[in-house]
Length: 116
Image (spheres, rainbow, N blue to C red):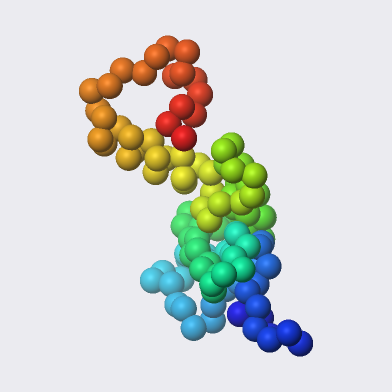
C-alpha cells in the first residue's frame, strides 16, 4: 500500500520491490516482488519471482523489466496479466493436456496458441 493525500492506494503496475523482511533460502538466489496489474477493488497481490542461476547472466533490474513486459504479451487480453505470458501459456497447456491427453489437434492449429 502507498500512503497518499487521498489515503492508502495500491502500488502502480510495474512496481517491484525487495522485501527486507524476507530472507531467501540461499544467498545466491536473487528475488523480488512485482505488482503487474492494476487493482481498484481490493489490495494488490504482488508475485514473488526468483532469479536462481542468473548471477552473471542478467542484471536484476533488467530481469524485473523483462518480467513486467512479458505480463503484457497475453494475446487474448488488452491489459497486463498477473504472471508472464510464458508462465500462463505453460499452465494452460499443461491443464489442457492433463485432461485431454488422447485428443489430436488439427494440423492448422498446431503452430498457434489454440489452447488459450
